[in-house]
Amino acid sequence: MQKRRWAALLGMVALVGSMHAESIEYTTWVKVQKSVPEYERVTQREPYEECWTQRVPVTYTEGGRTVYREGDRTAAGIIGGVAGGILGHQIVHSRRAKGAATIGGAILGTLAGQNMAAGSRYREPARTYVRYETRRECSTRYETKRVREFRGYKNIAWYKGRKIVKYSDRPLKKIPLTVTISY
Image (cartoon, rainbow, N blue to C red; front, side):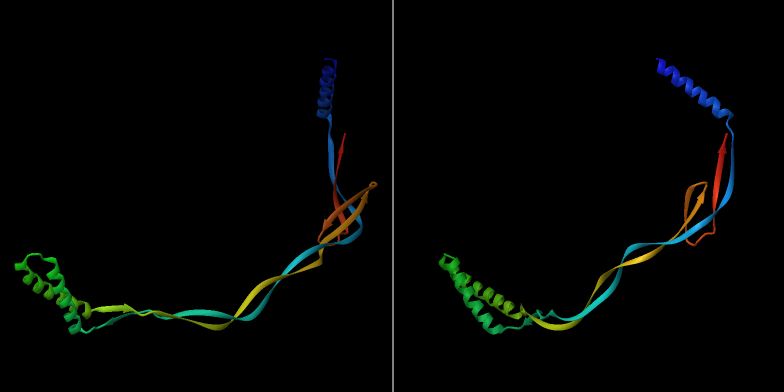
């Protein structure tokens, strides 16, 4: 409890003291004693192109088209007629209808054989060829360098025994200093 009272009392004294405090602020110029150029080591990557020629296999396909071929319609008709007649004769079991079935099968077989011979088609096989071409290939590579890069000037001055440092892109003769006096 005693500590809280002292803390509250000190806080009030500080508050009252700050209400009466005043300050003066002004700018003065301090003469620079020394300006030193500063550098730093930096890694740079520079791109360059590396090219070469090489033989590359190139595959291409030729052919592979559909061809229509006209067959021998007479031979196909005869073969179809014989096959149709035999089939018609075998299917029917009645003696009276066997003759009609044989003739009907022969007629249908002849027509089917002629139609098949009329429009036969097939696909020609495709041929694949390989030839070689010379091509120029390129690749981007990087060269790494460590270089010294200018960072700026370190300007050094002294004010009332204290060292003041200000960095700039050029050497300075004077450094502006803001001084605040509180009372």
